[in-house]
Length: 125
Image 1: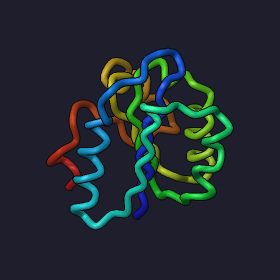
Image 2: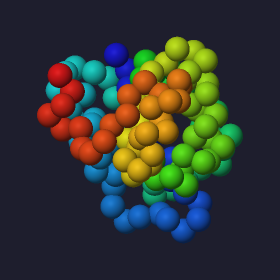
Image 3: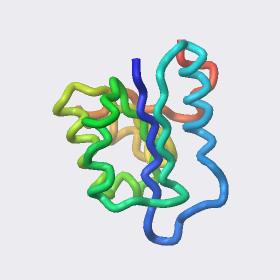
Image 4: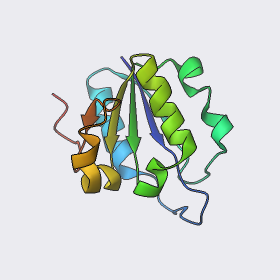
């Protein structure tokens, strides 16, 4: 399977100095099971909404994994990607602070396949 791991990033001064550890851990775990990984970390350089519009058609993932703070959940590009994935039958996994804080709401969102609370290392099987 092909997994797209994506950290949207914010345009409002929240760019960090460190790579995204949670998605890095997930990438390592999935690679151990022979999965194909595409990792796009826009945490360092957020991109305009239109720049993510072809992620699904170009990369053709089977699953999209998002690590989100709540302000990233609200971004148009994030919602558009989730909507497109759902319309094409692509699984969407959500983790990060938003999943931790709002998992009770996400569980009712039919577009979301998995909600990851905490780090995922050692839990894939």
